[in-house]
Image (cartoon, rainbow, N blue to C red; front, side, top):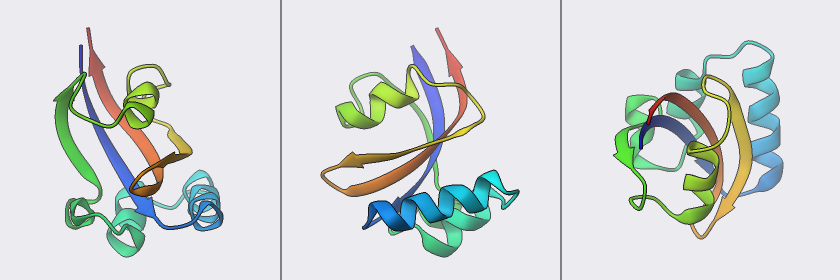
Length: 92
C-alpha cells in the first residue's frame, strides 16, 4: 500500500484547529502549509511525496492509510508536534 500526502506541522493543537477551520472555510491547503508549517516540506505546500507503510511515524500513518482522501484530517499529535494531514492519493 502506498500513499501521497501533504501536511502542516505546528507546535500547538490550538493553532492546528484554527488552520483546519481556515482550510474547511476554503483556504488552500498548500498556501496554508507554505505560510504556517514548521516542516521543510512547507516550501512544497506541505507535499511529502509518495511513501509506503513503515516510512512515517505510526500516528501519522494511521491517518494516511485509513482516512478519507482529499480532506484535511487532524490535529494529529506526534513527537514532532501537531499535524494537519491531507491524503492526496492512496493505492493498494
